[in-house]
Amino acid sequence: MKSLFAELYEKTFQNFKEGDVVRGKIVARRAKDVVVDIGYKAEGVLSLDEFLDPSSIQEGMEVEVLFESFDDEHGVVILSKRKADRQRTWSDLLVNSQEGSIVEGKIFKKVRGGFMADIGMEAFLPASLVDIKPTRNLDQFLGLTSKFVIVKINQKRKNVVVSRKDYLEKEKGEARTRKLESLKEDQVVMGRVKNITDFGVFIDLGDLDGLLHVTDMSWGRISHPSEMVKLGDELEVVVIGIDRVKGKVSLGLKQKGQDPWTTVEDKYTIGTQTKGKVVNILPYGAFVELEPGVEGLVHISELSWTKRVNHPSELLQTGDQVEVIVLNLDKAGKKISLGMKQMQDSPWSSIENRYHVGDHVKGTVRNLTEYGAFVELEPGIDGLVHISDISWTQKVNHPSEFLKKGDAVEVMVLSIDPQAQKISLGIKQLSDDPWDTLTKSLFSGLQTVGKVTRLANFGLFVELDSGVEGLVHISEIPNMTPVKLEKQFHVGDTIAVSVLHVDHEGRRIALTMKGETASLPGTR
Image: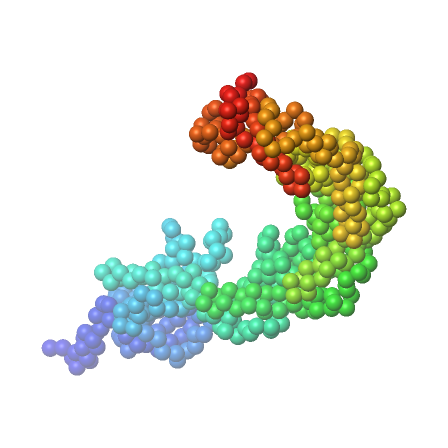
């Protein structure tokens, strides 16, 4: 029969079974382990490695441990705090956590494909989810205590996958939102140059990046942001725009100073002579910087009085210092028109001293238009020979019928307008008007012959023997239509005609092919 002590002993022993989580008290701390009293027939031993923070262990501290077994040979209880924590954590995890929850733990071991993290139980941390930025030195994360996001829970296998990267991104996003909400337009903030691109500079404002566009760096012209800043520079910038939906912040550096265009009307009135630097050359002109942030355009037509400039680069280069005069100012549009040729005497200012109405002068055909020919009399001085002033007797449809570009011609000065910078010239005026002489023998009813010079859908132009030109209207050609006209007559044909009427005031001669003689067929 068992003694009372033996029965109590066995009863106590039966109160514990493998896998039970029990509470115990630390009764002694040693170099590598602690002794735990769980009220059992023997005390248990726990390695210091079982504790996240061994320095916090004190005698008398209560701990939860897992009863694994009793070692009869050595007379000690096999306990595990880590397994107890894991079991409790797993239970808590299933009850209180889900995928997306945040837990805290310590990365304690490298494994294939990543790490193991102690979150009260072991959880797998893939290497790709350990940090926001990819890193080759994974050893730097060993021993790191951090927070993680639970990305997967497998209840059957009782394993958990966590992500430090997701937690960092979540924290970064929340910090970014808080920073964005704290900013106001026109606020001056400090930032650090984080990245430099062709179009601007990204500034780290702390938890949030802002863009300092190249156009907002200086009132003056710069080719690249690197001309003003370098990586790591600390800058004081102005918040000029906030897009809270897209989470973007626009910053300005030039806005810290006054817009130079606010005072342009005081400095650059029309007629003001000043100096500037050529900063850009385009086919239509050159941009000149008068001061940082204030540029004006010298149009190609305002470069020289005397030189024919096909491209501004023929006279200017970027960086040239030039003297200019203000021709026009548009403050609202931030435009200034400048002139360079006005800094020299205009050849038109003394034009009346060199040319007079009636003068016979020589020049070179520079350009042909539908309405006439421009003749260069001297560098910078062109005159117009209107199409009506080319011939007394012939109808001129285009100046190219008589002139071509580059021809040397003699002309008469018909009028001079220095203010409008215009000179009218004539070629036919070099000789007397032959009209009266050439038409003296012409009278209504006169039968004669002529040569077809031009065809129109309304009739034929015919040159008579005297050299003057008349018109046979289609109505004056028997049984004729525009289609038949083109088929039956050709330039150069000699035809018989009669004079209908001579209009001396309008300088027109009307001809007919009706009548017995005029109806004779034309000959080539």
